[in-house]
Amino acid sequence: MTFLRRTVIAAAAAVALSASFAVLAQDIKPRLIRFGYGLNEASNQGRAAKVFAEAVEKASGGKMKVRAIGAAALGPDTQMQQALIGGAQEMMVGSTATLVGITKEMALWDTPFLISNAREADTLLDGPIGDKIRNKLEEKGLVGLVYWENGFRNLTNSKRPVTRVEDMDGIKLRVMQNNVFLSSFKTLGANAVPMAFSELFGALETKTVDGQENPYNTILSSKFYEVQKYLTVTNHVYSPWIVLVSKKWWDTLSKAEQAVLTDAAKASRDYERKDTRDEASRAIAELKAKGMLVNELSPAESERMRGKLTAVYADIGKEVGMDLWNDTQKELARIRAAK
Image (cartoon, rainbow, N blue to C red; front, top):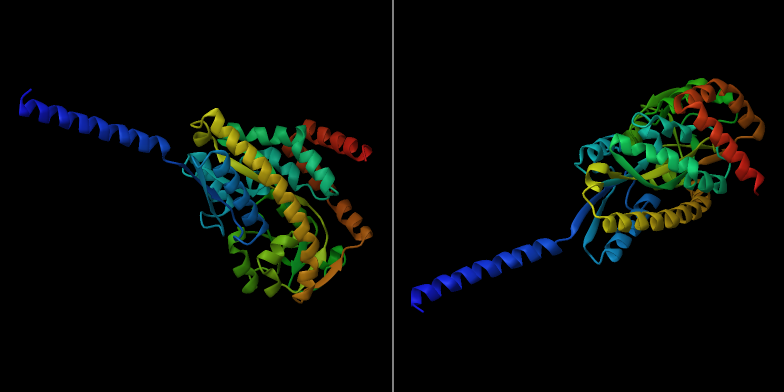
């Protein structure tokens, strides 16, 4: 064999070996998943995002890595939803309320005083009603994996204690960009102002709005006590979050990869609900210690609020479909009877 031929063969072998290593490197390169959320890293949302990320990496043997990005760094919920639909972002967790413009059935979860306690919430969300609504997202370009808990929403403001419906009159109240929240609080007398959560603290600080409504955990983790004096325990809406995946991206995954994400999402859900509830039980005491003046709306005033919202309930039934509305009422009756 001539020197030239040996050189050509050696060069060809080197190229082939290099190509093999390149393919191998490509094969073992981890799949990076951007997981966006709105609250800060120290919040219940941030802690659960970390649990999700760790579960994905462990179950995939490091082949899938989740980069959890909080504090609305990837934009507010509505912006992230559109990024998922377009395939520009892989995953997020956010409010179901901001999905109503995409999937009208999500408006069911905004119904004031629909859910009375955590047991009802878990059974309804994880059962056939929750699945039916979650599955509707796929035709819109999103995959809903699980519901997390945001919690029961309560009212804060910087003007006065709210002890009766009339105290809501004229309060400029930030609400989510959602028609049910807008119509509910307008009906109760507030000046409802739709606004992204990422803009809220600044708006409260500058008195662009007087108040807002969120669960205790969010009020605490977002430091609203620095710009809000009064907190009224209303428990007016049970508010879920939902873990979403871009359907465009989801369809590129193998069944095994989809299973890793689904199982990790369920693990994060179980962790997040317990963590959120444990924190909520402590948060009210911390908010009082931070100087907030807390009062609880009486059962009679809660009933007065419900009475004023009859037209809102009728509108929600029309929006989500009367079959879904009636099925939900039947399921809640079944859950309550099974106590």
